Image (tube, rainbow, N blue to C red; front, top):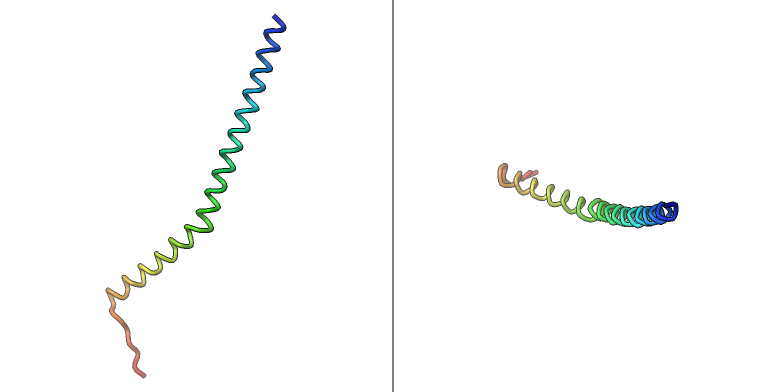
Length: 68
């Protein structure tokens, strides 16, 4: 009986260790993706948003000329 309990406990500990390693790997991958979004995609989207707003303003208000 004790051997069965020890064996089951060892298997359970091994499973928990593997699960923890898998979970940590997924967390690291998620962190990499988050950093990539913050460093690469967010600035690109912000620039495109500004350009589209500028184009919209140009269409609505036309080209403003200041003759001095």
